[in-house]
Each structure stands twice: as structure tokens, then as C-alpha cells.
Amino acid sequence: MPTTYTLKKPVLDYNRLQKTCKQTLEDAKEDRETALEMHRFFRQMVEENPQDAVAKNLMIDCLKLAQSSKVNVHRTLDLLIKLENTFTKGEVNGSSENLFDKLSTILHD
Image 1: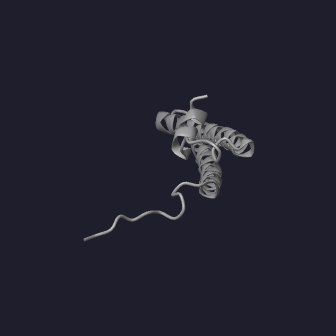
Image 2: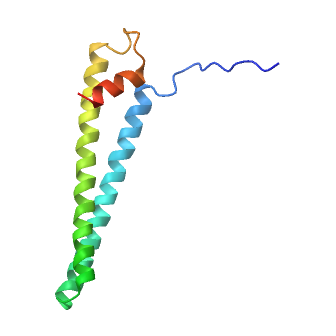
Image 3: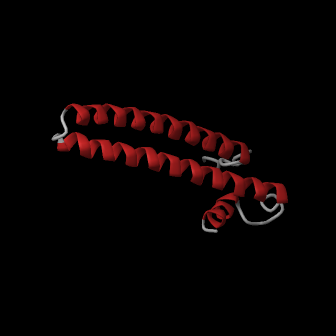
């Protein structure tokens, strides 16, 4: 008969959250750089042919992507700060509330 597998460590702990946030920040930086590079490319196309409506729309879309990646960085940093405050206060380790519930509370504050 199979036995129930019990985890020795939590699946989502403090270090893993920090690592995930770090990766998210690096990905957002890369996305922003790519979007700005593409924006410059489409801007050059518009300078060569001012009537190119497709290039104008793509140029605007690239700016939107660059801005959304910046917003994601701010959200991630805000979450990291709130998480750090929670851990330094000892609210997660000393309470009966699990980490997922605590993260949900932090996100909705």
C-alpha cells in the first residue's frame, strides 16, 4: 500500500520567494530593453516612411510593453518590501496562518 509523501521543507519558503522575485526583475529588465530596442527600430521605419501606419502602431505597442515591464518591477519590489517587513516582524513564523494566506493578505493591502 502506498504511503503519503510528507514534505520536509515548505514548497514555497522565504528563499524561494526571493529567488523568484529576483528572476522576475531580471526578466522584466530584459523585456524592457527588448521593447525599447524594437521601438527604436520602428521609429526609424516611421522616419523613413511617415505614412507607415503599421510601424506607428507597433512603435506604440513597444512603448506599452516597456511601460508594463516597468510597472511589474514596481509591483514586485513592493511585494518584496511587504514580504520582508512581514518576515522581520515574525508574523509568518509565529502565526498559524500559512504563507499562501499571508501572501494573499499582503497582495490585497
